Length: 320
Image (cartoon, rainbow, N blue to C red; front, top):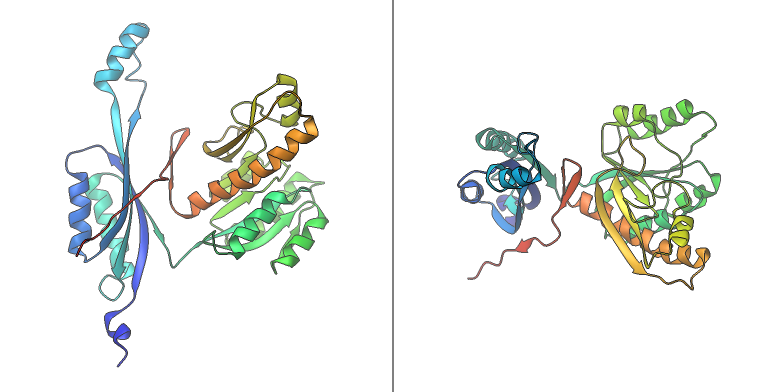
């Protein structure tokens, strides 16, 4: 007899809860999951302060600091992973229960099913090192996702797509409206995320409004410094002692979206612009992979202009 058919299969979910800080949230969550025979395997939490206009006094900096200490509002954010038996708790029941939980906490719950990975498309221009790193990590199983296509305004990128047996879409950027329409047609219904792996064309606000889903970009500079074009030239002229790369969410403002992940490396005055670029290539690869991986694993929470990153979830050990 196949006992697994009788018992059902165990599934894993990561969930992020966002709600106003209040007494008993953690107890409510653990009791809620325990009542559904779910087993918590990892957990992390953060109290995010909100400094609203009502907190910032107009009576000067001394008054402002006093009001911050007493009147600051806090938002509770918790990420947890749990396993459950799908024969006892169906997806339909889970969605219904989470809706009820949102109402009870006056908050928001974001679920990510391990068995249902996100889909993404990769956009790149001439430089392919970031896209190649993403694809390699995807092929080895490090990035839990489905990749729907490789898109580029350079036909040379088709070689990369063929190497990974993925569809390639050439983007003609001679007309912005035409190129963005072509991109949107390819990704609007088939992806949950768009990754700009050194795509050197600016996406318009109209495109962002139409896509309505997260877009992650890699900037070859340590934002918020060295925005815009030729950042390595800017770094060289500034005589910096460290350089970096930044993975961030795309916003209508150029190179100004919420920062997800940054990698840095030391440099010195003896290094040329070409040597700075060579160091930067490695940083761009690692920063983009790290940012995308955290998004896929439901470890990021956009909070105003910031991103809360749950990197160190405590894994729960159950002693017998």
